[in-house]
Amino acid sequence: MGSAGEPMIEGERASLLLAAVLGLRIRSKHDGTVRLAGTADPRAMAALVRAVDRLEKRMRALGSSDLADQASSYAERRGEAFTIVAQRAMGAYGMTVAPWEYQLSDAS
Image 1 (cartoon, rainbow, N blue to C red):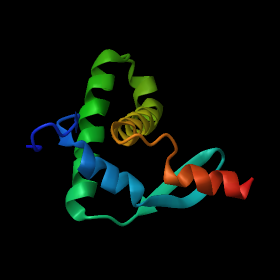
Image 2 (image 1 turned 60 degrees about the vertical axis):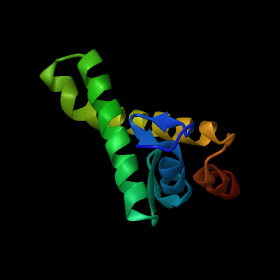
Image 3 (image 1 turned 90 degrees about the vertical axis):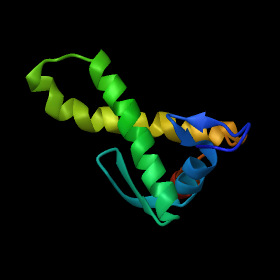
């Protein structure tokens, strides 16, 4: 568990999640989809995956159960869950802009 007073996000230490988020960069862009890749401490990346998994499961429980929608909405839900977790981790330490957003603005 986290140290006393350390923010927790989806059951994970915010500092671990932030370390993973800060290690991500744009790998590719295609049809409005941005793919991220990066290297970080394996514990930080594992914490990020667990946090996204937990949030995505809750989002799935609240969503529709239509089988036709599930395949396409899974990727969208994972993307949303990642965005929420990343924003919360950055917000816990006063950051407002993700590192890859600078890459997007430089490409424009």
